[in-house]
Length: 542
Image 1 (cartoon, one colour):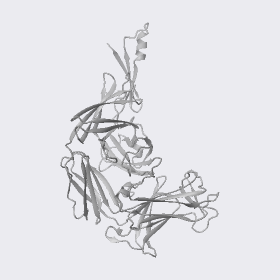
Image 2 (cartoon, rainbow, N blue to C red; image 1 turned 90 degrees about the vertical axis):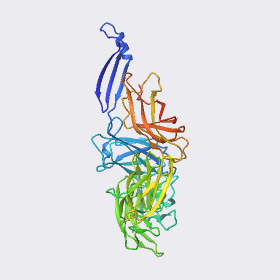
Image 3 (cartoon, rainbow, N blue to C red; image 1 turned 45 degrees about the vertical axis):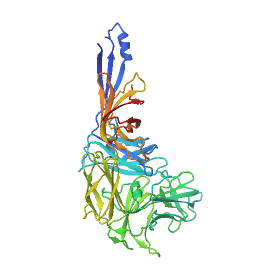
Image 4 (cartoon, one colour; image 1 turned 135 degrees about the vertical axis):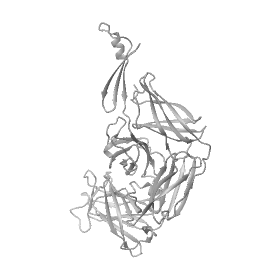
């Protein structure tokens, strides 16, 4: 009979050392000791994590998961409460597959009235730096999505202009004044521009002075395009978490041939007049309404929110002016280079609208988007629910879009939703017969002599969609993910999860993600219970 001797040691998770002895060990017979050493095995016992989140990072244009290395810094109200799979505190992470998983320390209990808020500062080569806050309102698994803008492929409604006329002398002093301007995509007069005076000098975050030819790029977010608003790489809320209405927005960058990116602006010793400042100018699109009711006029105040490259921000107020052609514009002079800037309607008012869904056989999550001029928000009505509360702007014509995994998008446009209720959005029945299924996955290690040597995989996630889904199709997060530990063999044998509104006989792609590792597998939905095997290659095998 085998004897099992167990020792425990506290790290952050629980390390269970399982010593399996093939025979009794006696003082004068070392063969048992040799066998015991050969059979020595370490199993990592991981503590449960009460609150976890899965964030899907998608390309703002293609809709696909970002296939690039994304660095994530956790900040904000509960940024210091983030933990990893071992329940160790972490302040950053690296994501290579577009799927970010993290946990909240068990001392935090999020709720609707007291959500845990985590700001994600995201950076990736070839993508625009993004800062988004997720609000976690419940224990258990939570899901979110964040769009990243690819610099070479911006979404509809985001226009860009590049200027290479700026240059400096050897000391970094701008020799001749220059401008860069870009207009909106809807040809309604909206635009963003920068003006740099001669005598100005730029430095990057390390204090290096920019020299030689300067390349300036300005991108404009058209407030009349939903795709532009949804891609804005910062929160569409104020410092208190209240929604904002955007009158226009921009991304700005200035860099030299050495790759130094401007972060601060100063006057050189040679400067005179307005040098040492960076001026940003916005022209309002035609037809923008103050508070959604009356046309803007010269003398009206508007706000500006600026997010800098270090993800700190400031709010400003300025008065609208009118040029000789009757266009309304506003100018801001800054001494720190803006990364993102948003014009805000200071008179905007909002109400809470109840969105009701007639599911028509669609049992899974229903996605809802709300768009009005300068306003965008989104939410999910979870499985089993038929109503959701959404903040909407007063007075403006508002467009609602709703869809589920197997139903086309339903669009309803309505004015004055605050006084004229939306009513019920009726989804079409699924395009093909659908079922709900439990998927059982068996785990094995690449080395057949090893087993998965953890007791659990807290904070893991599974996403899925049809294998032949068109590019940009929504990935859905599986529910009720749980893992099974085989006590007899001291290894994690597998797990199970639920998927909803899937078509029987159709092949789906499942992606299991944990601790920066992702395993993708194509599986055919054979019925309400589906089995497959996944081979694990990471060092949790042993």
